[in-house]
Length: 81
Picture 1 (spheres, rainbow, N blue to C red):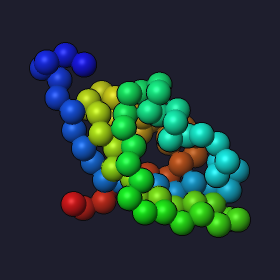
Picture 2 (cartoon, rainbow, N blue to C red):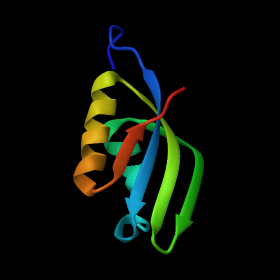
Picture 3 (cartoon, rainbow, N blue to C red):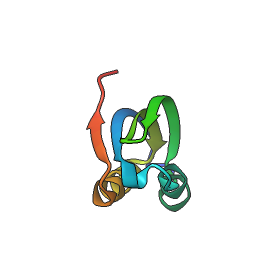
Picture 4 (tube, helix red, strand yellow):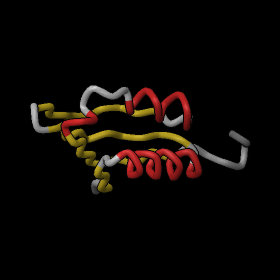
């Protein structure tokens, strides 16, 4: 990340369908997109998962990670801070 590109932090509500619950999606966005996920709260059931996650990274990294999550079928909604 260049000196001009600062990190940002945003809070999101994420919903994962059942088929994605066992996938290492948080690890993937951390390692591939250099986004730091911090899970604030979550609920996992046999029908899926709902997490409140704070993502920290450059604006481009956040945009790329959010696009990846959407392509995988994860529902993502920004939460008010």
